[in-house]
Length: 106
Image (cartoon, rainbow, N blue to C red; front, top):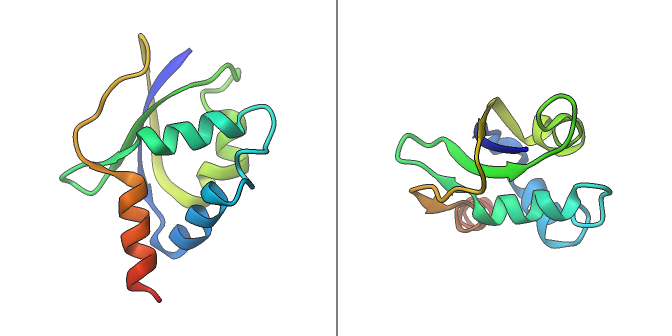
């Protein structure tokens, strides 16, 4: 099933999330690591500051495993909505936003 996801980034864990997305930590997670990485590459930051993306998931509870292993640690106020497939979202690329946050904190 495909979901539209909206969430608020926890700024205090942004650098950790970026590192895990780029060093292979999340990508190697089974069964959903590659989908999480791909989803974060599709994600955008909306004008309101919310992070928005679409993702496929086959858990009984939408994004159940993804939330337990990654998302609940790095995002708050996460909501899901069932959609027909991957969607494009309007906003700034999320990964570029993570890069900017990390650069400001160095």
